[in-house]
Image (tube, rainbow, N blue to C red; front, side, top):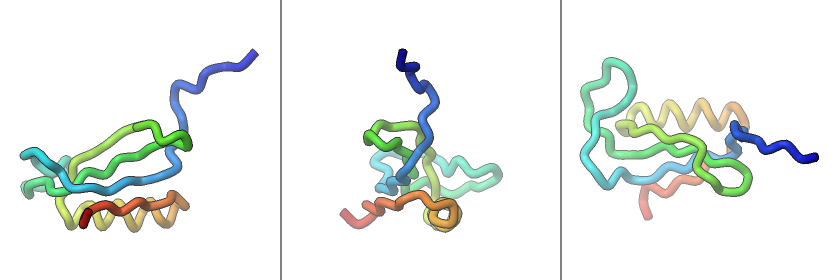
Length: 77
């Protein structure tokens, strides 16, 4: 019998512009969030997301690229 996976491992990190006003979620950062980093699984389903400023989104992109996640950068679309 197949068991459902309620905690799928993310395979892709999608970066896109934040369309609403929010603060960067990095602890101690007072900048306005301009980007959303969203992790999705192999089927393209949303796993989790976080609103970040440009500086912290670049840190997350570098870290996740080193971990082997595919990066889908939609910042300029």
